Length: 191
Image (cartoon, rainbow, N blue to C red):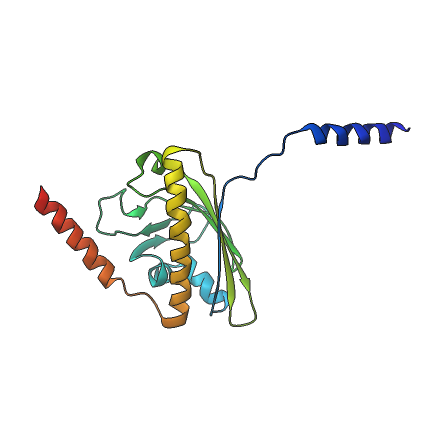
């Protein structure tokens, strides 16, 4: 047996003894929308685009390190509006964008940490785009598990809203905002 074959055999034998490692926990979502890549890119990288499907308000500066702040509740105090202080990490025009992300305000321990979301766009013909979302960087246990479950549901809704935006037009946030106002009024009345 040559030295190369011996080393190769030993490496294979050693690899067989190592325990298998589970893949990192991640949320994977995908949707095909009735719009070209240019339109879908603009939906993710402009304030007007974000407001058309994701949230009632946002601060967007589409460059690495630029703001990707999504305000689910624009009337909430600073730090509790939604994805406050989030940033774009990388952008490959009309192909990929990534950003850091935090847990909702009701999960303060997990919210103090950051996870990573990667959104990829791929044309499906000239009038459709596949949008793939990958959310990773999760811890284990406690609020991490709650945040994971929350976003496993929420990202499906966000991508569903993106699809609706291109099927029937931009979302109207007036009912959502009225609901938030009513909840605030009820909370204030209880004090």
